[in-house]
Image 1 (cartoon, rainbow, N blue to C red):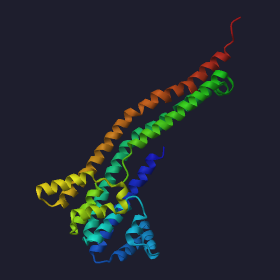
Image 2: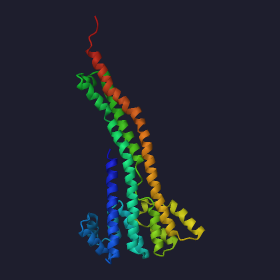
Image 3: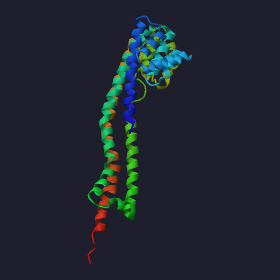
Image 4: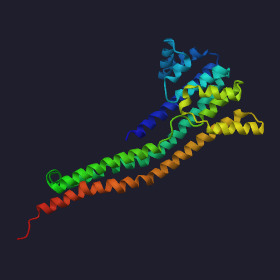
Length: 299
């Protein structure tokens, strides 16, 4: 069960990226040119910035060098590319992006914390059949010998191991389905707002966002509805898009907690169907067979 650890690493990377993006915004606002800002950040010890500078030194364009970091940096690369294309103020864009990335990382962190307890319980319960087997051996019964030599014991061993494997796969699938979706919620709306802040039209803004490196995990369903509302009400779309992005992040946090709450009850299904029968087959059945085989038959 490495899902929780991977999720933790992803959240830590997103938080580090948010801090770095905010630092870049401050450096740019102070008058540094973009590549020099990245060099200053690299000199401060930021490993991601050092790799970005090295890629730029090899001739890779800055947005592509940022995108190569993967993870949350793909959103930063997309915002950087859109802002420089339309001429939006880069420092303000990065400052707003850093807040969005930090909010998204906080939402993912809440989900990870909510999932920690049911995931830990699932891992513990999966060891229950083995614990039952070792308990019988510790009490002095030849449970291991029964499992490997007695015909019924061999059948119990095979069936029990198959049930343990099924429980592990079933539990892993439930945990995977409870994980948050990749990418930062609301980032499509944020990027469209960035393009609009540079004076681009709505159609061009949508095209620019669709051409960014982060397009694979961007969802623009809510963006289209917000743009329709903006046209109908005759109000600027930028603030509406940012509000929609914030709402998407809030919804992602709520949905993640709900998934974690449902996971606690869903994990009872593989427990009852696979883990408990495996415990009986590997722990209780060999113990009973050992007692019966050691009891002399009456004459």
